[in-house]
Image (tube, rainbow, N blue to C red; front, side):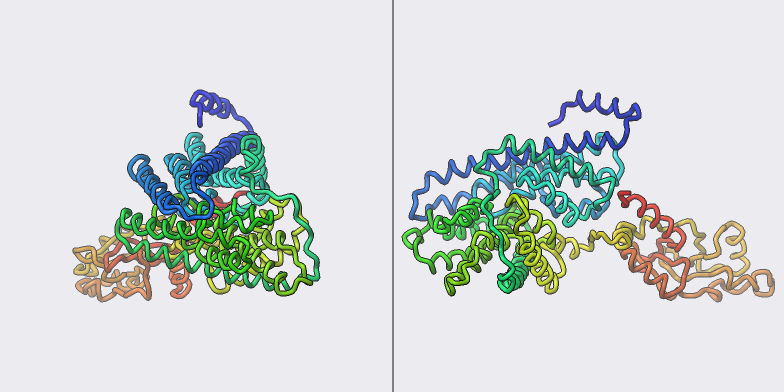
Length: 591
């Protein structure tokens, strides 16, 4: 992947004062080419292995291979990731979001290998998840390695991760615009004057190299899309609501299965339970095998009955209601099989499953309308594509990505208005009932957050520990006022925390409260605790900065004690917090 000699020469060349903009353009080209090539190789390898396996299954019957293959594939993946690569945690988009949220911007270099081969093994052997997440993990891991090599700062690293993600998406689908929007909407990387050029170049470079390498049968593109007339607006509005409710179902099932699977203590237990159920589902409904793009292409091309080819329903392939019932069951089970694939230890994501489920919803919806009233004659292919965008928008909370993705894979913007209508309604409906996307739900549960709202982002990145002040003079509780004067002479601060022998916080002595009596020798025998007060409130090192800011406002304090389980840790001040806030704000701003 990297030639050390080349990188060394490149590094030397850069150190001679090369223009930073040119440097990033060259890096974005390199990332685009490497990630685009990886995307093409991964997709091609999955197609080759899958065809090699499935050609031995006869049409008209369910083969026991359909039960065994996902078990074999995911088991090998788990062994490879846990024992060989030793990189078991945070695969896919969730891992990238966590890295960005925690302000690390670093992806382990092992992730490039584990995601690449884990994605191939999982998907080729029937794992019911998308390849987009592992390819994005590969691209961002490459970007992170480059960032580490060149010693880039956080802001530059974040931009490179965006380049890797955009290149991955563009390398899979040849959708450079949608890929950039995906980075902005899902990874929450700001699109600014400084970031747009590297992102665009990485995206275009990936599309070019992938298009040159990837076989045409792998490409998910369509040329025969027709316009949907304005007279069909009522149908589109209803499809938007239907897509939103299906998105809600998709998210709720994902969260429920995740919670149940994580209740099992060991990875081997999750593997055994998950792959066993997954094997049964794929055996009964082979359309759940793999990502599902090949099935979608068959449906859009008018061959929906091909879903029954290696199924016990093959004899009923010409029965309308059998095909509709099969699609309905598969649409509801796709999210189950996908979540089981991932929770079992397989490597994959939710992008393809949401596209697949949305396509089925759009197809069934339009087909049933035509069946009930042929005079309406709405266009099934186009509604299938629009349905894909609707589920994407609702599941991922990325309506713009969904709109431009569907527009670009159909080679034009003839469906732009229907796409906007359905995606917007689906997104609003889904978010109304479940505010978090399929990617961010777990982050919120863990107290992590990413947002384009700069204030929220900075307050999240700013921690109590990073601004805590420990140089205040601590005084014992049993000293007298006279002894206190010695502490005053050695201190540069006006606040004195009173702390016990075991570090327990007792109270505060404010010099302003004792100023009038500190020189009265008649009072020198009095205990300093006579002048001690209890703070109205305090914070702990585990509190979020939003909590601290709220307490500053409520109490009017400029300094507030930090106490963990009764133990004194230090103080935080408004001035130090504001200074740290400004520094992080500069760091996270792309311009």
